[in-house]
Image (cartoon, rainbow, N blue to C red; front, side, top):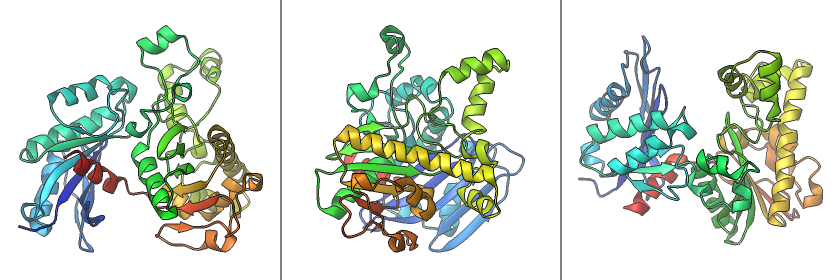
Length: 395
């Protein structure tokens, strides 16, 4: 038996399962993979172990079948789970409501609570639950731990978490700001505090991927975040509107004859960068701009304008700013977006170093000038490692 301790992290989506076998002490992934197109005529599984990639293209009937095939791959090509020292299975769950301020050991009551919260995350919690249920069946001999996207924001100040909605309606239907991407925001802000050797920082973290969110963090505690009741509010995203006048819903219903489901689909799947430019991948947006596409240029302008608004707003909320950090796929790799997000913010003490910003690296790094009053950083997120470490902290 290996002396190492590992956590199998499972992120179950509606038609996919992402997984990693994480060594939380070393901070490394010993294996990882993705099960895609669950329930379709042809599935796809990609398993990575020690630099080797093994693929399957067989049908994956359901999540149980998908996870069973993953366990077979661990047995066939490694690493052998029987020798990996698994001490827990960690599950990502999007919505923990006001019930969960940290990780929780899975039992029947926790499962029932996650199910009750599903109306607040109808696209995510049911899929997360399937992963938990299958995982408990196939791996019954180790504890299962859930880590919630909303947990880091569960303690938001009430004036930041409360909407100006009729109080009785808001309370009856649990309408408030819950946030999302909390595991990433917590991990990255802690990394920044460690890098800068301070635990009293006023930080803004910009998690920019296909989904995007901003957080304001003071002394390690979240005081505001851009996503709200759902992940639709806030920044411009790959396919989501972000902030929009809620009366747009009434307008489209009355004048375009659109149903609630049609507006939901429009706002969540056909808007954002995709709605503005035809592309939800910023690499393609940059290509269109180089080709002279005016709509793509406007789309990027709208995207970065919203980022600047949130940086300015959160600096005001915190009474100043010590560190601004970019993370996730776009934040870690797109120098043009980073430059656009801070353009004109010199009055806040932000001074970007163009050469440091343009340099590509997978390592955490500072990209501001030595004289910048605000330290600007790029810090890769690692939600799987964060989930594994939270699972270990609970055990």
